[in-house]
Length: 344
Figure 1 (tube, rainbow, N blue to C red):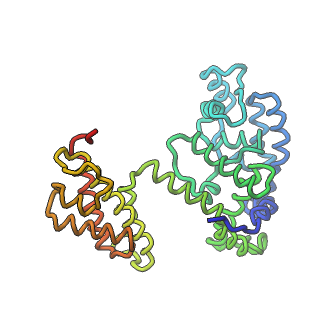
Figure 2 (tube, helix red, strand yellow):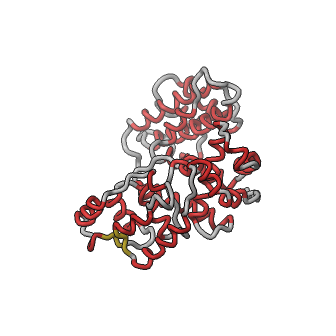
Figure 3 (cartoon, rainbow, N blue to C red):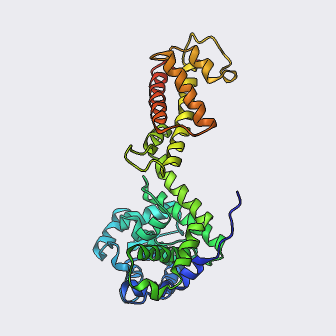
């Protein structure tokens, strides 16, 4: 489905960055001045502690207080510990080895993102809680990978929306999240500083490209830690939740359970030496179940096949039926996993 065009409300968010930061923190943020100072660092290819002090200068912005920074002694000690020459970190813009090097000195990905954002704003941004929230960035096993995925999203939005720098997208997203949070908390400053906030929020929820990024980020954190059968079970709402409002969630749970149930039965057939049919792809699920020694009664498994078919072809099965299908899915997976290895 093609993505519908939306007004570039993010451009407006960027233009209000100074106003919103002043409303939130009571002082101006001189980010362009820091970029100029950091540009000199980029030309040398090395980051020293004196360079770092320029980036986190409290006279230029308040952001330096949001992260824990090493002291000069800690910076020099860590550089020496990891074999960095001249108490400095050599870098090549945001490559994985460079991010790994910076993590050894700064220990956390937040400060690393600050350094890279100012040294090369065209391609990098700051990873902070507001932008993690608005893009639904979940936990990751490796902070480096989490940050690289984030800047990939920034660069894509930069190119799609006509921004010059990834850091500008970062700033715009930060403003958008602050506006949403202020709207939810009924903050006094919002109506005065951003009188068009309702239009922005409507545009944000209608932004399909941004929504696709958020959904991918949400599902990535799920798929990294859970298998599909576990996701199916997690999707089924508790009995006391809102039955009418949760129907789409129940139906998605049913469809995943139906697919995983069918896969488990087929896998069990492949693992059954005495199974009489070689061409499994030519058989219906009902035929497979009728010729397999599944635990329990044939009536139960025949009913499970009917529930599976209803979930796949119609999708409108009751919550109790979905619970039964989940039970059968779980039992089929355990049964198939307890059989011998698949036949060649």
